[in-house]
Image (cartoon, rainbow over all chains, first blue to last red; front, side, top):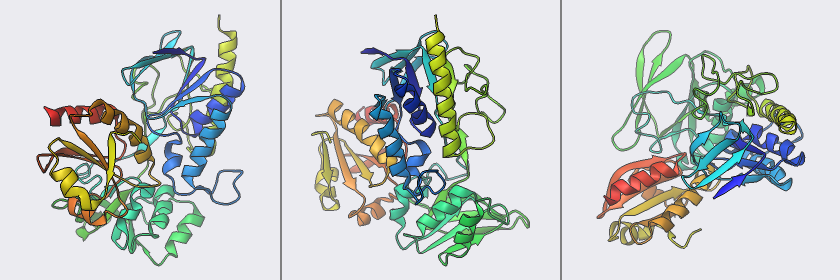
Length: 309
Length: 110
């Protein structure tokens, strides 16, 4: 089946859904494609405390669902759990093939594919994924009730998710490469005062071992280079993100870290192709900045659609 | 949920999975798990497509802790394949694409 739209938005995280809200309210026929359920990284964040408009903490899943519901209220169509199996982003009319079955076209594409959790790339990491290694605390935290687990990282995600994991685990040991957290001061302080949380400063992971499931985490002291084997029931890894630019390679310029370079209005050198959110080259990646990008992309796209031909 | 996907509990593991004459896919899922929610429609669609050739089962993590421990499953979603009473192929965990799951089913059926 082939359907025609005014705007196709790839990625239903905060950037994509903010773009969808603006585009749909401008009466553009708007379609959002997501390989998962909408919400992007927000949907696997246990709570959000810094998004304006929510004086109390809101669960990431709830905020994600609210973004999608608001976009759908104005007529946006959201296709969940679809895979783009072929596409043409350079053409005047952009074309996407979904699950080898349906084709969707539009003069404008807004790519807001965001970023995914960075992997360490260490021995045993892939093998023990789902068997002791996790990248999602809300998904897997409950498997570790009463267990002794480790968290790798020291930024906002690592520290906040460690606090969340203390609901289940007996102890959470944070392994961090530096001698202080990079997380926001209020979160860092909360973690340092939590009796279930221990911190192994100035250590980096070096490998994962076990028979059927993960049993041992190898760490190295970055100052003394001394290595130790720590027995563990599970390891959660929160060491940042990598941009998801698979669709865009060779289509638009990427910076040396792999993020997409855009103009201030989110446009790219390809007419009708906009890029917004965490996948874009920029200094700060927050829900608020993603939403701002999405808004700008949708407003620029409206102008493009109106002035086209 | 599709008619072709059946939810079992750990007490049924032997009769439904190990004793199945057809290859079996078993999906461990949890609540508040976005990748599980994302897998569900793909799993349903594939279950329909492979009806009669493979069985698609789901098991809720809560209440199947012993089985999860025995199988070494500690993440949701995790999809395992069984054939002739034994686990075969490799497991899928986390964000699972429809195309990669389909390829794995084809490999198990071959």
